[in-house]
Each structure stands twice: as structure tokens, then as C-alpha cells.
Amino acid sequence: MLIKNALTVDVEDYFQVSAFADSVGTHEWDSQPLRVEQNTHKLLDLFDEHQVKATFFTLGWVADRAGGLIMEIAQRGHEVACHGYSHQLVYNQTIDVFREETIRAKNILEDIIQQPVRGYRAASYSITSRSLWALDILAEVGFDYDSSIFPVRHDRYGIPDTPEHPYRLMTPAGRSIIEFPLSTARVFNYRLPIAGGGYFRLYPYWLSKAGLTQVNRRQNPFIFYLHPWEVDPQQPRIAASWFSRFRHYNNLDKCEPRLRKLMTDFRFGTTWDILKTLDLTGTEFSIQSPSK
Ligand SMILES: [Zn+2]
Image 1 (cartoon, rainbow, N blue to C red):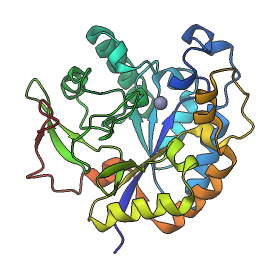
Image 2: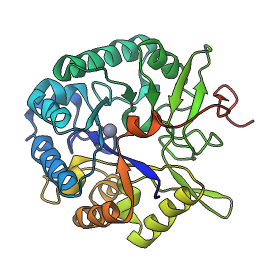
Image 3: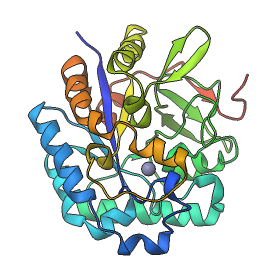
């Protein structure tokens, strides 16, 4: 029996990504043409076609403007989870602002779907050693799991040397929350990020498939992510640095055909469906000592 993996979508629009934060300010968001609804519908139809259920980590900002879409995601049998409110990097926020925005986003989503929202994912995986306090707040406000930790080194995110599989995380203040870290494959001693998004567009499909297969061979589920704008090659182009444009626009036309292949090559479900069946006894990891 093939292992079931988590398929996740970070529901935000093309102008809200961290790579464009210097080009399109938060105050300009409302004047941008919104494409997140049509693109999320495209994903919902693709998932139906492949009989796959997924988790949609949704921005409160989007839910405020597209409540019908959030309702539809839930009604079509998918999991609605939380991607914060304003897509600011957690380590750039104060503890109080983070707490206020997180509660606000969770409440907006729960009011729409009338069900508990169990999962959280930070903007650009920005829970790092500089913002571990965020994990305490997530546990405190009632999330069952987090999926924000990339166990790699990167310029914007990552806590190297943390576990590469789902585990029970003990927060700095001694609370407990399940962590489903973004997936990595081993290439010699190097951890290769293999979880989706820009990596999925950058690598040839065979490399993504080989890396994800390796995770399943270790008897672990992987977690895969993408964004609605990644299946929208026609989106408006934003003036930004060469590197930001490369990260955002590289191989946009290849994402959808590759996603179709991925859904035939692997089994998928929602994050919570997978986590609730896992026995996490013995996986406890104290986040104060990530390198021990
Ligand atoms: Zn995001």
C-alpha cells in the first residue's frame, strides 16, 4: 500500500509573496487585480479530476475578500487551515502583532466554515530560531499542528538539524504542538528541499519524483505545497529584482502538467487526515536545542 502524503496549497495572490514585498506594499494590495479565486478554482477542479483532497492554508486577507471561495473549499471536502492574516514574515513582527493577527485569521476562517481550523503555516516558513516564540502562541491559541519549519539552511527561512518527519514539538515555554516540517531528501549529507513551490518548478520532474519517493521509502509521508498563482502563467508581471523575478516566474507553464503527473505517481490527502493517523510517541523534540 502506497503511503499517503499531504497536498497543501498556500492561498495567497501573486502580488503578496515575500519576493515582491519591496515592489508591492500591503497598502497597494487592494488596487491589484485579484486572481486568487480563479486560480484556486483551477486547483479545486484539478484535485476533483484526480480525486484528491488537500489542505488550503489560507490568508485571512483573502478570506475577508473571498469568503465564498473558502466555504467552497470546505464544501468540496478539503481542509481549510490558516496562513496568517497579512503575509508578513513572523520574525519581522512583534509577539503582540503576531498573536493578534493569528487569532484574527483563525476566527475569520472558522466563522466562514463553522469548523475548527487545526493547522497553521507561516508566511514564507518564517518560523526560525529568531521567532520560536510563535510556536508557543500557536499552541496557546489552539492549533493542533504547525507546518512552517523548513529543516534546511536558506536566506529567508529554515531551522537546520530539526527532524525531517512529522513529530511532536515541545515549544520553548513547554507547550506541545505537532510539527509537519517541509519535506527534504538526502543527497549525500545535504538536505535537498523537495517540498514543492519554486523547487518543483526549478527541478526537472524526475528529480522531484526521486526525492519524494526517497521520503516514502523511509516510511514517512511527505508534504507538498504550491500556490494558486503557480498555475497561472498569464498573471500580470511585477517589476522587481532579477532574482525575485526568477524565483517567481521560472517555469510557471510547467507547474500544472507536472502537478498532474505528481497526482498520478503518489497518493495524497489532507494534512490533518495524515497526522491524525500517525503514532507520534517517541518523536518528541525540544525546539530549544535544534542543533543537538
Ligand atoms: Zn505564503
